[in-house]
Length: 68
Picture 1: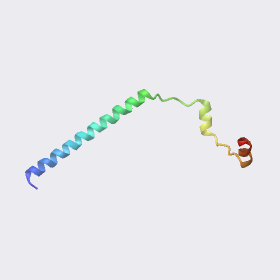
Picture 2: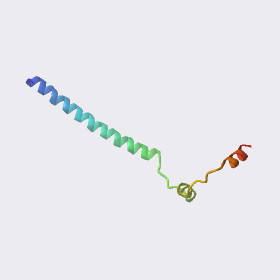
Picture 3: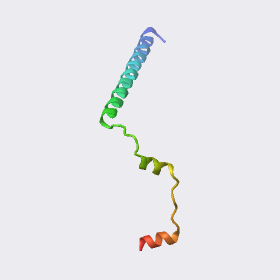
Picture 4: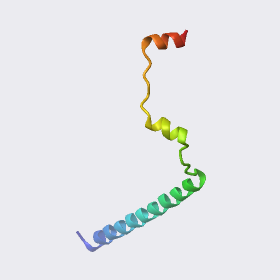
């Protein structure tokens, strides 16, 4: 490998590192934007209960009655 090839390889690595840094910055900016636009809300007591409780399964008879 001659000195020109080594120089190009070094420059390519530098460019890739710059791209990685810029991508990281873009990811952080995007996260901040999303955090501002989509507020995080606490679940209500009713929602928490619905999440934590086991679902009741309907049997065939109940489904047919509901469907009419």
